[in-house]
Image (tube, rainbow, N blue to C red; front, side, top):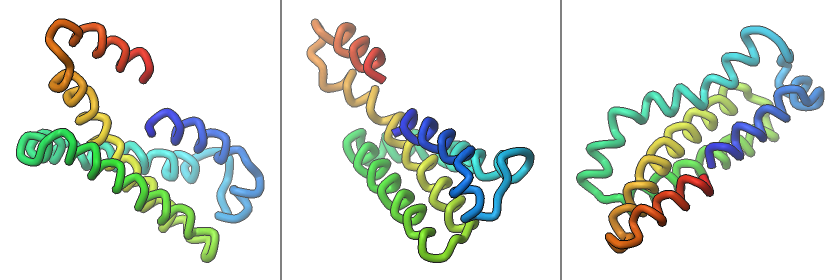
Amino acid sequence: MNGYDGSLFNALSINHQFLDFFHGSDTGPWQARVSAMYQVGGVVALPFVGPALDNYGRRWGMFFGAITVVIGTIIQGLTEKNGSIAQFMVGRVLLGFGVTIASSAGPMYVVEVSHPAHRGVVTALYNTFW
């Protein structure tokens, strides 16, 4: 989730059709604000990550994070109809929120379900493929 959005948005941010559609520019505050919404969502999620994963479990955290990412993606995709940059940024905030929760739950879940004899290798593979 995390790397795909970053690479996808970097390509969009220099695309002239994207910039014309949202009346944006490829330099300055406009692009910084739109790009930063993803990180804002991640920072907003931080106080909720620990309590949510401890109270509801890692699988629930991965599920909730993935559902939040899907909702954020739908919100972003629906901007095709109205060209609202505010709606697009709300979708990016939801993406950042969901990715933070899912990517926090994933490594802990891998460690918890791995057999103790293989835990180090499995965790290293998880981090390698990340």
